[in-house]
Amino acid sequence: MNDYIGLGVIFIGILFDLFGCIGLVRLPDVYNRLQAATKCVSLGTCGIMFGIFLMEGFSGLGVKALVAIPLIFVTAPTAAHALARGAHIAGVRLWRKSVCDEYEEEKKQVGRGKPFI
Amino acid sequence: MSRIVYFIIAYAFWLLLTLSVDWQHLVTGAVVCGLTTMIFGKISISRARKLFQPQRYFWMVLYVLVLLWECLKANFDVAYRVLHPAMPIRPGIVKARSSLKTDVARTCLANSITMTPGTLTVDMNGEGDLYIHWINVKDDDAQHATQMIVKRFERILKRVFE
Image 1 (cartoon, one colour):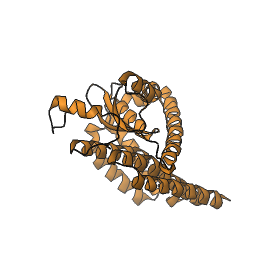
Image 2 (cartoon, rainbow over the protein chains, first blue to last red):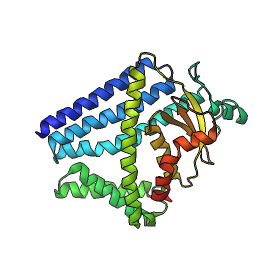
Image 3 (cartoon, rainbow over the protein chains, first blue to last red):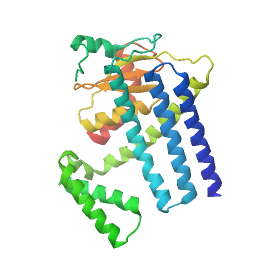
Image 4 (tube, rainbow over the protein chains, first blue to last red):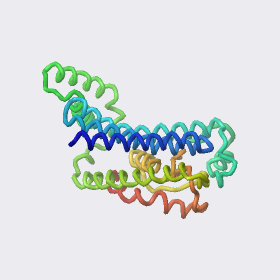
């Protein structure tokens, strides 16, 4: 029984991973793509891990999969933040239909090219 | 004091990873955790006494539940925007102000914002201003943006960390 529930959870996880990948291709610029990559891929991967835990129970493999979930939840947003900040400082433009960029205005006030923190 | 707490956390993590009480594993874990504590102990926990206040753990559990719910909503939000043929997005970077003081609380807030629907933290400065990439900007006004994005988690995080 647990095997089937586990397989179902793994399937949902893979589905969300797929949505993340479609977003990575379809969305227009770095920042929007990062949105899709962090949200969908982190929850999708966590779903796969949780499915493995359901199938394996409290064995060595299952507990390791369970421990990996909080680690992904902490590291994925941190990596996305680092990538977005690095891209913006390196001068990657937002999509041309973007509405506003208050970060750019703030950077111009402090001095071009230099990270202002 | 903070080094002892750090050692206990690291050792518990090691026990979870190995999941056996074989003496060789226990000794290796103790040595490795001792080494990491010696190297990183100074920069880990600044106010260790907060770890012994039980009401913080209750709010922590509530925070994790809220975060998971928001994360689920975020996934359906992204899936909807990605699969919709016209791609209903209106991206932009807005500025929001948080009133949290400690570094840990601010880090958690930034990470939670990244996990909530449609928002991604780009940067933060020393006064607690967050620059947030918003996939569907509803309001350019900084005050209103703060209300919509930050307040949800700020109330809980204040009780957990401050």
